[in-house]
Each structure stands twice: as structure tokens, then as C-alpha cells.
Image 1: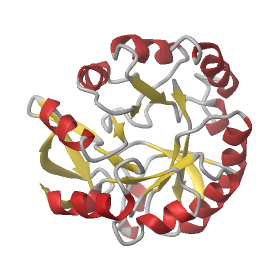
Image 2 (image 1 turned 45 degrees about the vertical axis):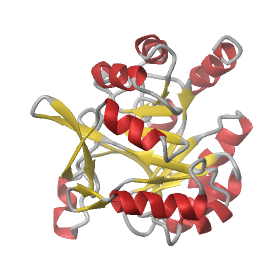
Image 3 (image 1 turned 180 degrees about the vertical axis):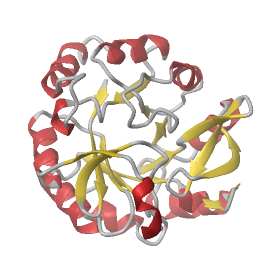
Image 4 (image 1 turned 60 degrees about the vertical axis):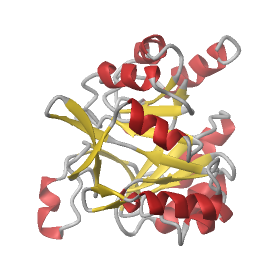
Amino acid sequence: MFRPCIDLREGRVVQMVGGTLRDDPAAVGDERVHFVSEQPSTHYAQMYRTDRLRGGHVIMLGPGCEAAAAAALAAYPGGLQVGGGINAANAQAWLDAGAIGVIVTSWLFDGPNFVPDRLAEIVDVIGAEQLVVDISCRWRDGAYWVVTDRWQTFTSLRVDEDTLQMFAESCGELLVHGVDVEGTSAGVDLQLVQLLGENTYVPVTYAGGARSLDDLQTVHDVSSGQVDLTIGSALDIFGGTGVRYADCVAFNRTHRSNW
């Protein structure tokens, strides 16, 4: 199924190439931004609410996005997940603000090392069902590795059956960005989709590289119906030309009863 998104940079809705985000102001010129919307985050949240697209993600890409994220959640309470800077101390506040789930990645790591106690801590605070673990990853040395810190830091955690099983026991859903193709509209990483489909124990959404409506069916087939797909840069509502948002909505309505 199609899952929508709202990516925020400095409070504005954007589409970026994965892995190019920089916190250092001197490196901002290295960022590759495809699209900056003239519409506020609430415009997209209200659109998704009207079209009954539940479970999309709002991602805060750096500071200055909190107000826009909160406004989106208020516009579609109980319909969107939120991520970016989430930890055990603020997770409940975002749920109280209307998020259906909170997305966590970097906080679960100390440098390159996964810290199981932090996962246990946030589960203790909000429960597993409202936790979405983002195991966005990049390919290196013959495997997919989780990346953190705006997708800049390779961790020592490999995305494989054991990792997927471990997180499935402590969260309600997984979000996986194929960072090597994120924001490029260059095609879905079907090897990663297949890996997720074969080892999925909770709902999982894949994002990265989608460029046509056919990708929705392809991801469904390759993952044996276990993986949902986010389409970003290719969508007409984000300045893309490959996919019409209206067609994605129609796809979900047509296939929901069949899947």
C-alpha cells in the first residue's frame, strides 16, 4: 500500500536526496534539495486526512521543524507518525500532540553501537505498539548497515533476519529508508525490499527511489505483500512528474479490500 510523507527542513516541506543533509551551516551547499513547498505542513496533513491515508510519517530533518511537525499532527490527529530527534524524554509529548506513533533511530545508538537499554527505556515509557524503529540503511561490504545522524554515520548493526526479529519484539512497526536511492527517483532497492519481506514480523514501510505507480505493485509482489511503500520526490504534489498523488490514493482504495 501507499504511505504518504511530510519531510521538514527548517520548518518547510521539502524533498531531499538521502544522505546529503548537513547540520554544519558551512556544508549546506552540499545538500541536494529537489523541492521546497510553498504550502505549509498542514496542507499535506489535511490532504492525507481527507483521503484517509493513515500511517504516513512526518520527519523533522534538523532543528526548526518542531512547530511545523506539531501543526501537521494537530491537522490529522491519530493519523501520522513523527520522527527526528525523538527519545524517551520527549516521546510521550509527541504522542500527546496527536502522533499515532513515534519514530526513533539515532537515539538508540551511542556512536556506531546499538544500545539495547535505550530501546528498553523508550518501550517502558510509551509501550511497543506506539514505537516505530527506523532502521534506514546503506549498502557496504556486501550487506546493509543501519545509518544514523542524518544518515551520515555507519553503525555496527547489520540489517538481517536477526536484527529484524530483535526490533520486532520491541516495536509496533519498522520504517526503512533505502538511503542509497532515497530522494533520487532512480528505482526501488528491490533487494532490500525482498530482505524485509522475507523477515518481516511487524508492519514495515520502505522508502527510497520509487518513481512510478507500478512500483507499488512491484513492492507488493517482491515482498509477498509484507511491505508498504512511501513515494516522495516522484509525486506531483512534491514537484515530481513520475507519479500522480491521486493515482496512489486510487490504488489504495482499489487494493485495500483485496490485500
